[in-house]
Image (cartoon, rainbow, N blue to C red; front, top):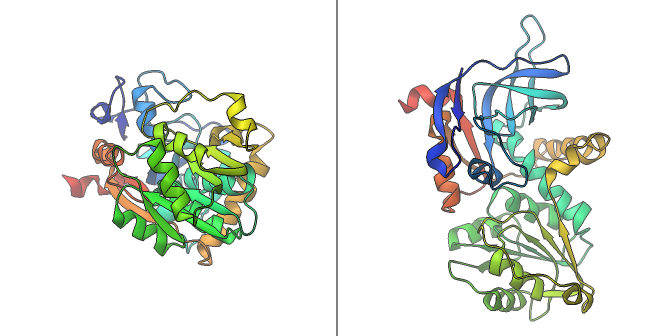
Length: 334
């Protein structure tokens, strides 16, 4: 089968189209013919081997897929799910049966992929980590991204009184406001922690903010922490800038009774947690998409062989919404 193979660690240039052996599903797994592979920012870290969990060369990247279960003679079944051993950037992938979910007919492939890694992350940011309460202010950084656009909508649905969206361009801010954010804050290149704090307070009418969903790192983290109201919560779920924030000391948190909470979706996939932390919220998300209550922002769909371009665009902040690789587009790509 055709796949994207990483044989050396590095930037987007290490994503090389190749022909590899077809994967074989075990008794508790499903073989899926991929119609869409989700591209996540974590994938760019995996290619560099700077992700939270290390990788062993060579490997086929990609952690989530949507497609048709390969079951000759069986009932056709369209599922989305998490791959068992990596390998989503391919024509065929193996998905754990416990982590495969039927996709309603009203839900498109990009929408189904949007609610897997990114939708579940947004759901847990709102409900598990920040525990957003009615009337509270919520800051969503990178609000036009795959997690951000859903976090904006879910925070509003949870009763947030003021959702403050940040983004690197005005077009992205306009997208976030169109999805329900109350105000947009432009945070471009070279922004300092002082800038971040000042702009967030200004966007909240001079008041400090109750919750921040933060995946940039560096100055954005530092400024967001400084902008927290008493008993405010900052949830860190990424570090897109690849820049560490300033060292954090307990005394910094004590004054103001602030909380800094980390979130990594992989922890929800631990044995014993899947039903409550993945199955229940994911079915809720798919139902919301199917009936129109939740509108994932669909980004660009690339041919599988253009995985390098997809990573380049994502790292350069040229993407919005859910980015997808579709193996069926390879022939058209030439």
